[in-house]
Amino acid sequence: MDLFEHQGKELFARYGLPVPSGEVALSPSEAVAAATRLGLPVVVKAQVHTGGRGKAGGVKLAGDLDAVRGHASDILSLDISGHIVRRLWIEQASDIAEEYYASFTLDRSARKHLGMLSVEGGVEIETVAARDPEAIARIHIDPVDGLSRQACRQWVQAARIPEAVAEAVAGVLETLYRAYVDADADLVEVNPLIVTSADEVVLLDSKITLDGNSTFRHDDYASYDATQTRDEREQAAHAKGLQYVGLDGSVGVIANGAGLAMSTVDVVNQVGGRPANFLDIGGGANAEVMSNALEVINNDPAVRSILINIFGGITRGEEIANGIIEATGRVEIDSPIVIRLDGTNAAEGRELLEPHLSDALRMEPTMLDAARRAVELAGAGPGQDLP
Ligand code: GDP
Ligand code: MN
Image (cartoon, rainbow, N blue to C red):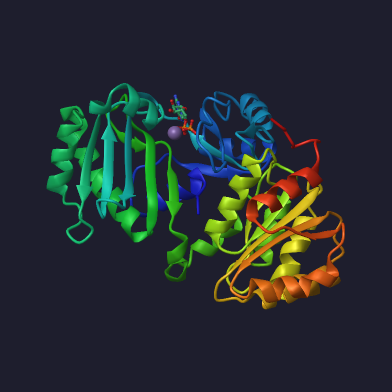
């Protein structure tokens, strides 16, 4: 789960980390009111779950209230890599002398945490890594031993952080690591970590990804979850407890198991179609779950055909077939359905489906055949770029 920048900064502030004061604003007049309380100049910042806001025009400096109002109305409803801005963070402007980069993430192959620090901040770390890998000082942190102040000092030295701010940066890193561990984060990235002209170290941006598996031990996760941006389809699917991700094609996809669902999305692409979504109905594909899945997909106006790809494991073929039959009885479906049913008791399942087959409900023997059929039925149209 991704946090907004301001949620990350509020988390940092609870650890005493230096962040600029700011306020959330949802409209230009709220932005003006916030700027009045904070004092000018301020920076008006788009709050979206994606980076590159600066380049996209989502970060603007305002020296007076007219500029605050103007920037706020420009940035609200701006589309940044497909994320529509609905929320702003109004923040006291900082006087930037240097921009550094700092992050903690999990290095699964090393079974350790990985810290990265660079004096070349403010640009994407991938760019720095490609241009000058030596400019990034990395350390692996054993989760049991943790990260000492002494280790931070050596790390800061390896990154060639200037003497004048070395101790302050080491202190920030030590505390930032504690915040990262306490929050059960998969990623905490501060880019830029700045030095002001008065040699103060300030965390000017935040990107935090929390591990959803640790929700049960964090009361604040529910409030973060409430602010997740989902499109209408994703909201409906989430409310029904489905693992759904909206995509922009015309072939609705239902599969059991995340791996199979992803493969199905790939195969639809491979045969020249465009998937409308990723949807994993999990292990127990009963009628209830299948109806919910079909309903969510059926409500997507871009969908022209539906591909149900099931490989029975613990769940047997006849249960799945009954689920599909019952679900198509419950929900009126506008698009033709193509089923691929394999795995445990597939023969029994197919036999049950046989009498229900029609132009609206078809069955194909393999995943590839089913994908081809579904793509053909979706036809060419918007969201459908045939090669
Ligand atoms: P991102 O583009 O989504 O990573 O957004 P950032 O929060 O990192 O902001 C992008 C850039 O805007 C930063 O690297 C800074 O150069 C600039 N910026 C952000 N806040 C301020 C500020 O308070 N004062 C000044 N002068 N520049 C800022
Ligand atoms: Mn940034």
